[in-house]
View 1 (cartoon, rainbow, N blue to C red):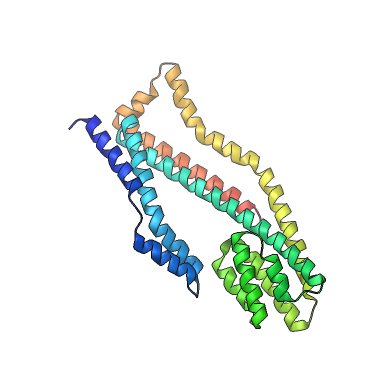
View 2: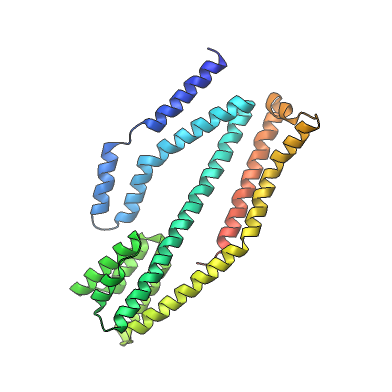
Length: 281
């Protein structure tokens, strides 16, 4: 079988993996876990990952390895997988950061509504129900809080349980739980405590935005540095040094291609970790 036939077979296999349907049993179990009691959030996320991510990852890896192998041999296949894995990881991290920012913004608006309703004399249950109109997570949490307050449940404990299941707004929920517990324990005005929590969250969101804006330069520099090896290869080809032939056609070049790609990927991951930890939560 020729190399072209092998490439075609690998491409067909990758497409088949991408089109393979998800397991109905996993889908039903995920829906049951969402509708159940206890700690459904983590279980649902795990089941969704088991139903989707391995199949998607296998498709991406197969396609990436095929493309890299056709361009630069076995070393190119491995280097292409490394680049694809790092790119996918960074895309997932950015998407998670955007979702978290959206949920925190929705939580900020909800706390403002909750404080205004309490100042107007509303019952805590009614105030929580009125504030439960933000994002999906905020709506679910404050809807549960409204029902718990209506039935006389321990709202601080309820908020702590939700904080364990909702990592995007866990810190905010724990602050709300502490404020609510303080109001119940010492008789402090709940409206004033909610307003203080809102002001604190607003200040932290503003600080996080400022730090993210200041980190735009270092992030751009890291991306440029990661792309310099590619520029070096292009310049070498332009002056006739033919580094592409060395990297793709010699054993030493294959090793250098994988090693260089791995080091560049490690640098991207490390710089992303540094800049990510610099943003306050």
